[in-house]
Length: 308
Ligand SMILES: Cc1cc2nc3c(=O)[nH]c(=O)nc-3n(C[C@H](O)[C@H](O)[C@H](O)COP(=O)(O)OP(=O)(O)OC[C@H]3O[C@@H](n4cnc5c(N)ncnc54)[C@H](O)[C@@H]3O)c2cc1C
Image (cartoon, rainbow, N blue to C red):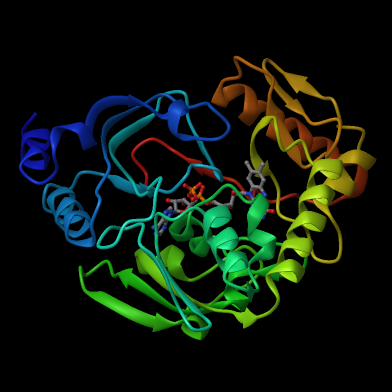
């Protein structure tokens, strides 16, 4: 495979895989194999990998922690570039550094780690992130949020690789953030960001984190395998309420089930496939539409084979 050989020149063998099962890289734990998976550590490695795929017209996509995606059972025909680090390290895509009220973080830093690190240094604004199992890059793209806050509100600037290959830093106000959306969908790959936070006593920050964590435990199936909320909240309402009103809680297709605790979570009961989840999603949508007249839109991104 000529493409794989070319990548081998750019990335060490232990960070390059063929036929990598995607269920190991998503929180819903479904998805067939990616032809190739590559785990770049630095921005320059990432740039080289992307241009290697582009010149050969190989379909590619970027993955963070895989907590907001659903890959098909056929997997992905092309290259999956996974950006995620376990421990912050300078010079990598998972660097993490505080300077006064600013925190600079690489795309591969986990949101909970970012939030705990801010709390430890007496910075407030990221408390809502502790229960969100994404990393900075994927979470900025989808403007992750909870408890009335979202990343767009605490970001100062974002570093991106544009489709042209240029590396640019944009102000957060230029990223087009809205409810669980950003213009980064069109604009390329996030490599890092700067967050502007508010000084506060660490005990106050920890207390808010505790409150949010307890609320999540009470209201969401956090310990089950899921991709978070399956549907976007329609204007002025909540998808979970509509799903409940349509009698869909507990509905099951194969190993996929609408959570009994929170109707907007589809959980993997063990052995679920992507097609189970997709059939269940269709069923829920149909029933909600029939009973309430509302057409639910997906929040989770369904990654179809070979489509970027
Ligand atoms: C138990 C649970 C609770 C959750 N709670 C919340 C919540 O409260 N609020 C919330 O908003 N979400 C929540 N989620 C959903 C999910 O965790 C978030 O959407 C998260 O921000 C996704 O980040 P990720 O790194 O996993 O992205 P991924 O799922 O890996 O990717 C998401 C999208 O971003 C793209 N992408 C990934 N990395 C980059 C990059 N570097 N540059 C550009 N594009 C990129 C991918 O191609 C994909 O389209 C929850 C999920 C679970 C499982």
